[in-house]
Each structure stands twice: as C-alpha cells, then as structure tokens.
Image (cartoon, rainbow, N blue to C red; front, side, top):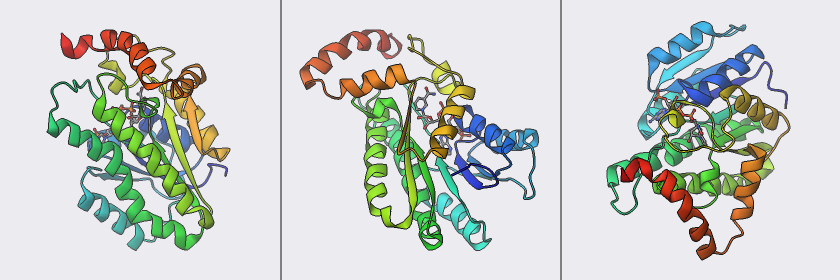
Amino acid sequence: MKLENKTILITGASSGIGSELARQLARRRNRLILIARRQELLQQLVQQLPQGEQQHLLFSCDVADAQQVKDVCEWLTSSSVQIDVLLLNAGVGEGFDARNIDLDTFRHQVDVNFFGVVYFVKYLLPQFIERGGGVIAATGSLAGYRGVPNAAPYSASKAALMNFIESLRIDVRRYNIQCTLISPGFVKTPMTDKNDYVMPFIMSTEKAARIIIRGLQRGRSEIHFPLRLSLCAKVARLFPNRFYAWVMQDSRKKIGKRVDG
Ligand SMILES: NC(=O)c1ccc[n+]([C@@H]2O[C@H](COP(=O)([O-])OP(=O)(O)OC[C@H]3O[C@@H](n4cnc5c(N)ncnc54)[C@H](OP(=O)(O)O)[C@@H]3O)[C@@H](O)[C@H]2O)c1
C-alpha cells in the first residue's frame, strides 16, 4: 500500500518517533489524526505540517484511559472519518528495579504501552472489518523479545504487545487487514535522552521514520531496526535462559547505574 492520500491515525504524535512520522507522512499528502496528551505540542506540530484537502485533526487523549480512547474513536466513527492506517506508537519507559517493584509505575507502563494499543484496536477494528481492509501497526521494541535488565515493566508490556499483534494478525486474516509490529532498537528521542548508558547503533528519528514508512508500504509483518542490533536480539532469543542471564548481567551493570546510583 502506498502511504499517500490516506487517513492515518498516530498516537504519541507530540514527540520523538511519532512526531517525525507525522512530518514525513504529511509531506506525502496524507491526512493525519494526531493523538497525545500534550495538546500544545500537537498544535505546534500541525502548524508546521503541509495541509492537504482535508484538515489534520488532533486530540488530547490519555491512551491509558479506555473511556477517553472510546470517546475519540466514537467521534471519528460518527463523523465518518474513515481511517486507513493506525500507527499505535504512544509509549513510556524508564529505569526500573525489579528488586523493589513499584506497582503504580509498573501498571502505568503496561496501561500505556499495552492497553493503549488494545483500546484503539477494540474501538476501531469494526470500522476496518466493515470496510474490508486497512493497516494496524503498533510500536513494540527489541526490549520485548526477551526480558532486559532494569526495564521489567517496559520489557513485559512490549512482549505482551508483540503477542497481541501476532494473535490479532491471525484473527483478522480473512479481512485483508495488515497487522505490523514495529520493533525499534535505540532511537534518539526524549525517551532515550534520559539514558546515561551506551546505546548501540542509536539512530535519528528521521531515519527510523523512513524505515517504518518503507516497511509499512512493503506490507511487512514486522519492521525491526537497526538491523545489526535486531539480528543480535533475534539470535539472543535462542540462547538458553541461564546463558542469556549471564550475558545480560554485564549490561545490567552498565544500565543499572541509573537506578542503583
Ligand atoms: N526511542 C527509542 O529508542 C525506542 C526504542 C524502542 C521502542 N520505542 C517506542 O517508540 C514509541 C515512541 O517513543 P519515543 O522514543 O518517540 O518517545 P517519546 O519521544 O517520549 O514519545 C512518546 C510519545 O508517547 C506519548 N504518550 C506517552 N504516554 C501517553 C499517554 N498516556 N497517552 C497518550 N500519549 C502518551 C507522548 O505524548 P504525551 O506525553 O504528550 O502524551 C509522546 O508523544 C514508544 O512506544 C516507545 O516505547 C522507542
């Protein structure tokens, strides 16, 4: 599918990968529906975007709140806004020490990273099924392949998301709906700007967005990058558990600096 002259909904559009996807997709004459909590950032973004025949729309919405997502989706459906592509990209992640679990932080990451995708699929999938097609893409992470140190809620929420997209792909197969998992490694955004450890092969948002758009157009079931890191992560899935834990211990020392002090 060519991503031109389409209607594309992007969550997490106020920053990082989401806002760069919006810039690149608007240049291709797509109409955008931009979603995040910080409305002022969305407004600034929309002012910079080329306008097509139909105005871009923006919604301040907490994707972790099912009612807010329902309200947005119902408004779109009742206003006959036909969405071609869902880019469910909103996410949060921060250092986390599994030796001392903070339930609020854990739940929040699962609510945003996992349920923030499930809610949109619940409320917009009927539209896709009725029209017999569309693209549903969700941003996971290479950290979802296996448990990574100092990121238990992030890793667990992204792993849940991977399996959700995989199940969904099978369940909607007959409706011509493309389900794509986006699995980035490190991308330079406000999320990773907080990190004080080495991030191998970190790439710009511009490059990440180009790779994502190209992968979506090619109908990929998974878009993983950067290749050198994603291939290592795929191989690491085959490691025996104890060997994997031993290998990752070393990285825990570096990554753990932030929470251990
Ligand atoms: N950067 C990386 O290295 C990397 C690697 C792998 C995967 N990812 C994934 O890529 C996606 C984008 O991350 P990013 O790096 O671009 O981070 P970012 O710059 O921090 O952007 C995160 C976006 O998510 C939105 N968001 C967070 N909580 C939300 C909520 N409750 N409701 C609605 N929107 C919410 C934020 O908007 P508001 O704060 O305005 O709501 C923001 O637009 C995330 O899913 C992340 O897990 C990133």
